[in-house]
Every structure is written in structure tokens, then in C-alpha cells.
Image (cartoon, rainbow, N blue to C red; front, side, top):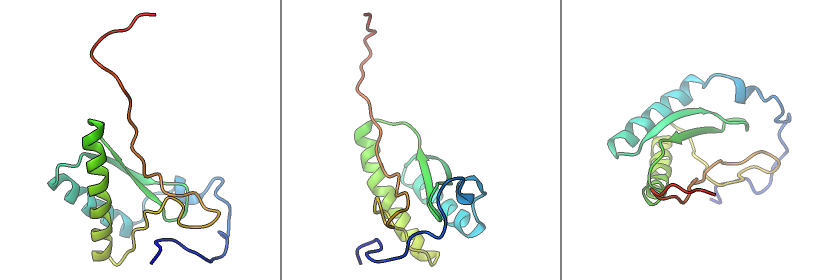
Length: 122
């Protein structure tokens, strides 16, 4: 119910040179991620890439750059889509930043910068 482990054992192996990070996406997960990408496309969410992350069974979608207020809305909507599609695939989507003790957590964030159309000189 908390969306994370409250009590549990440490990971059986460290994350240095983790097989997960350098390996290919497993077929079951790729099917899930393809469906998430399709649903995102229908909603106008510009998901560009998908790949493994360092922690075991951690994956990432990378969006296309867009205005920060729209990106924030898309981030929230995509997380909802990810959870709904996960259920259809018999998976559970954990979005907590640190779901497991001692293991790298979710990379969920919104990068933004401030700029205008004026060129600056020092």
C-alpha cells in the first residue's frame, strides 16, 4: 500500500556494472513499454526513448523537450498511464523515488531552464 518496501533484504548484488543497465530490455517489459508509448502518443505525450536503468527491473522513458508547464502535466499524466498499463500486463509500477532500501531509485524528475529570445554578452 505504501508503494515501496518497508522491510526487506538488501539487494543480492551491488549495482556496479549491473547486468540490468547494460543488457537488452526483456521481451515482457518491452511489450509493456511499447503499449505505454502507444498510449502516450494518443494523449500527445512526446516519449522519445526507453531504456534500462541501473537498479534491477528499473526502466526509463525519456520525453522530448517541451515547455516546462506542459512537461510537468505530461509527467503526471504519463505516470498514470504507466500504472494503468502495468496492471493490464500483470505488472506493478512503483513510482516512489526510493522504493527499495539500498537500491538506486526512480529517476522521475522534470528538467527545466530559464531563457528568452535575447542574446546575452558578457
